[in-house]
Length: 256
Image (tube, rainbow, N blue to C red):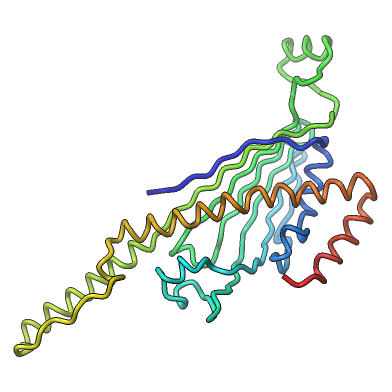
């Protein structure tokens, strides 16, 4: 089973400001858990007029207690208090002429436990507030150059898929083979060891539990991500890049 979160909303800022804020969004008051951001590659295609960027984010987080009860801390690299960190690979493509940006982010660490793929589309509303001449031009040649008005539409999709069940199934197969070997060799009259409550769970039940818990966490974190972008956009509007940089420096100094 795969869990999917989706959402649609708008920013009351033009596409140019929103696309810039996207690359300046970490850290912010709602994302101080982002420890670092590094640009891996960046290229511009002169034919398509599109900018492609690949970045790597290092994020700190604390696993929900429910997940810690389901999974060994070692399987997700968590410390004794449940704190962990993971690398997130992000790819974005921006087309300023057509007024859209598509992004995809996915976790690199512990993807064997839970794979999280987040896709976002930022789009300038093509025909919103367009003049009659602009609409006629659109009907004529299929393209339109619209003023960068004060709105950008956003569509978000997060796909969560756990593979922990596959690991447990393989582990249980090994356990079964070991048990069969013991029975062939002869284990005397000893009673078989009792299964723990965890081992009695089916693989699908564990997988579903991990995905459901992660979905609940996504439903709480996505509105915060939207608020974080709004903070960066507000800083851009009132003080430009200088205020954004000062805000980033302040957010880094505040402990998570």
